[in-house]
Structure formats: structure tokens, C-alpha cells
Length: 621
Image (cartoon, rainbow, N blue to C red):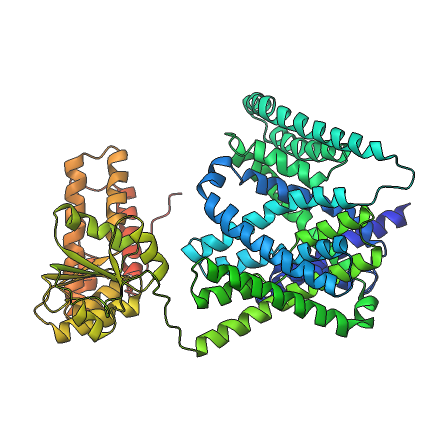
């Protein structure tokens, strides 16, 4: 008995070790954590080191990770959020799902599959990998961009599609030979009753339950209740003849508007992540490597064909919805692979008898291969696009070059967050301004709010001339690009030296660089906001408003003096001023002097004065 227990413990250690080693390695290679889990499962599974021989047992347990994943998706799917994004989700997203489903189902049928099997095989590829796509968007900081939001909306639609797809698979599944025709209607009635019962419990019982438990102030009880909700909903749907994942998703949607939503998500997250990783490891174990090697030419050809056809469908939908060519190609490359829910869909279809076990293994292998090829495809597409000129899509946008010569009182270059706020005071005083920017998505979004933003590259002298920089009373450089800001200031001061230029500075060193190029006014983007923040902190601590304002003015004065000294190359004088006496209304106590010394050292570090003396504070013992 002790040997068996030791053997189980050894398997657990090997399983965790494989995941811990593989995932960081694959993420470092840019292949994503999902592929790392799959590779770990393949390595320790029956066709690798054979540490585990029954991968299906682990896969069944790990399906709880997918159940919790769908519960979290349900929590994020508030009806109010769905309503706000209804056009992108149910318009763009549904169009892409239906288009790709039609193309891939037709291809599968032409390859000899029956229509039901072809449909199931196609839908596994239609549902793109949320893990891979979101990782790419997050790494490039594009999740909140207009183009990124459209992709996120499509992913949300695809995630929502798994719910009706599981129901469709259950409907398409052949009935057992000993089952009477009327029993199918009974089964549907039971399933409907389970759904209605879950809705009733979620709507009228769960919120009072969590309100009661929150008064107990026992964190472990709340965590246990969260798990109970997820697993109970999954069990109810399973008893009703439907999918566990469907029950978890429905429970999440019902609780999405609850005040306990964030608490539930935080409690479920550790279990979801661990079990979802275990699910992917189980999928890797179940990959039939001899089957793949035996027919790899056909398998590879089929995967490439499905990815190319799906990419064509994604590109077509993107172009029909007025997306530019470059973003359309990138979207097609990013979403050409199959996704995580394909394994759930195929497993459900195999369990229902819709597809055979061998077909299930082939389809799983195809999706895994597509996920492995996706990062390579995207990298190749990005490299190819980078080598080609990328003319912007100016459909519906007025370019500075095409517009009549502008003669504004103020020219604003860059209309991101900073530029939008900076222009408000000017517009409030009815000052005539012209705005130029290079982000076509932002220009289209600004037009919906009544702003007339021209497309133009402020780093080009001809664009500055056409924009009226030579006759403007002032130019505001608000772009979120350090090098571009410097270039624009340099061009304007060389070509139009009498035009006042106000610029957004990235940091202190950038501010000095702009001053050397002759900028009339620079604003470090975090300085004033941090000053206002710290002065409010003083007021919250009981410091009088007049005293706090005096402290702020003194800090600003000293900062300006140091900036002037650094600009003139007098670093020693700036450092001496930095270590000079601080403004203080009363004599400082010992703790205050220690805090003052630490503030001096921190300020020296911020300003790059690396030669400052280290701070030593007396012992408090």
C-alpha cells in the first residue's frame, strides 16, 4: 500500500514538474503556455516517457478546469456589457463564426466526411484559441485598442458559441438502438426543466446565500460556496442530459450582475488555472503519436487547408466590415488556428457517439498542430508586412494632404488621451484648432463624437506646412512617442522659429532634450498629476491647504531651478540644490530628518544623480 501511495505521489510530482518546466520554456520561445502544457502532457504520457498510461482518467478530472473556465466567462458576460457590445459581438462576431463554419463544413464534406461529422470538425477550428490570441494582444499592448476590441468581441462570440454547439451535438447524436422515439422528447423536457431550475436558483437564492455567508467572515466558507455553485450547476446540467460546461456558464451569467461577482472570480481563479493547465496536459497525453506519424502528410495537408480557408474567411469578414488590409491580414493570421474548446466539443461528440474514437484522435491532433503553427504563421506574416509599405486605410478619413490648406489658431498634433484633454480648454473658449493624428482607428472613433481629426504624420515637414504650423499662434505636440515628439519640435523650431511650441515630455531627460531644441513649454506627463496626488495626500493627513500649496510651489520652484542648471550643463550646482535645505514650516524632528534624507536620495535617483551620497539613518534600537 505504501508503495502504491509513493507511486501516486511520484506521478503527481512528475506531472507538476513537467508543467513547471515546459510552460516557462515555451513562453520564452514565444509559443505560449498552452503549447507548453500540451508538450508536457505528450512527454509524460503513454507515447512519451509513459509515466501515465491512462490519460483519459486525468482528462476527465481535468475537464473541471474547462467547467470553471466557462463559469468565469459567464461572470464576465454581464447582460449590460453584452448590450453595449451587441453590434461587434452579435454582428461582427456572428458573421465570422457563420462564414468560417460554412466554409470549413463544406471543405470537410468535400473531403469525404458526413455532414454532421464535417460540421463538428469544422466548429473545432472556427472557435479560435482565446489563450493564444489574448496572449498576443496583451504582449503587444493592443487589447484596449479599437482593433483589439474588435478581436476580443469576436473571441467572446466564439466562447459563447460553445454553449449552443454542445446542445447541437447532443441533438445530432444518434439515439441508442433500444431508445424509443418518444424518449428523446422526454430528455429534452428534462433538460429544459434543469435549465429553468438553474435560472430560478441563480436568480432568487444565490445572492441571499452569499449575503448570509459574507456576514460569517470566513474566507474558506466563501471559497467552498463558490466551488459548490460551479460544481452544483455543472452536476444539474449533467443530470438533465446536457453538458457540465453549459451549467457552469449559465450559473456565471446569472451571477454576473451580482455584487459578489469579483469575490467569486477571485475564489475560483486558482482552481480554474490549475485545472485548466491539467486539462491541456491531459489533452497532450491523449495525443495518439503513432496515428499522427502514420498519416502525417494527410494530417498536415488537412491542417494547412483548414487554416488557410479559415484565414480567408476571417479576412473576407474583416474587409466587409471596413477593416484595412493590414489589420485584416493580421487578424486572419492571429485567428486561423483551432482553439481550446475544440477538445471539449470533440470529446462531447465522441462520448455521444457522433464521431468515432479514431476520428476524435485525428481531430485533436489537427487542432494541436494548428495551435503549434499559429505563432510561426503570425511571426511570418508580421515580418512580411514589415518589409512592405503599409499605406493607411483612409476610407472615410480626410487627409491633410487632400484637404484645403489649413490656417488654425492652434495646431494639435496627436489626439490620444493627452491630446483630447489638452484640447478641451481651447474648444471651451471657441479657439479655432486643427487636429492631426496617424491612428486611423482613433480618427474614426473621434469622428463619432463630432471631432474633425485629419490624418497626417507630424514628423514630415510638408504635413506640418499643410497643417498650418507656420501661421498658427501655437502648436501643441501631444503624441505618445518620445522620438516623434523630439523630431516634431526640432522640425518646427528649424522651419518656423517664431511659432510657440508646447510639447508633452516623456520624462526629465526628455524634457531637457526638448528644451535644447528650443521648445517654449514642456510638460512631463506624470509630474503634475503626481504633484496633485501627493498634495492631496498631505491634505488628507491634516496639513492645511495653504501650507500644502506652499510646499508644492517650493518643490516646483526648486525643480525648475535644477532643470535650468542641468540644461546649462551645471550638474554640480543642480546636485547641490537637490541636497539643499528643504522647505519646512517648523523645526524637523529626528524621524522627519530621516524621512527628508530618504526623500533627497529618492529624488536624486529619479533625476539620474547617481553620484549622490548614500543615505544612512541612525539605528532605532
